[in-house]
Length: 122
Image 1 (cartoon, rainbow, N blue to C red):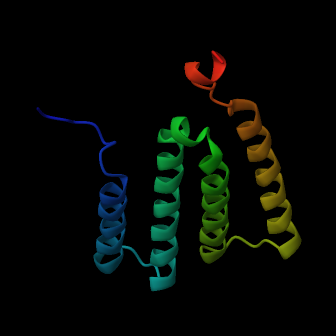
Image 2 (image 1 turned 45 degrees about the horizontal axis):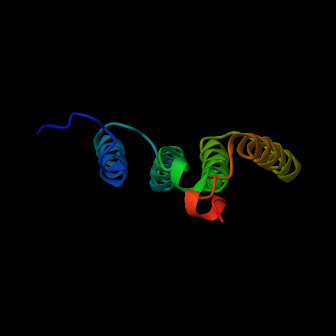
């Protein structure tokens, strides 16, 4: 049975994309090793967000918040590495906003799973 979905192994796909970035940087892109490392960190953080959304039925979305916060931190670091100028207060306000927005989203979408029938029939 053939499976053509890209959902099977997120770590493999993230590693493939990351190694592609490293290959391009080695031969074609004029970027530093630190920038390549931050690009790879952002790729892995995005894979973490993907996995958190795919497994939200298991943990009622609890892992989504930390995955999105980690992705935001890696995106800020990536932006700073490529020349974005932001103060500590600006990055803190971005993280605060994202944290509150994600907390509101997870709170609204996470529902407690009902108890089994055996617990209800007492």
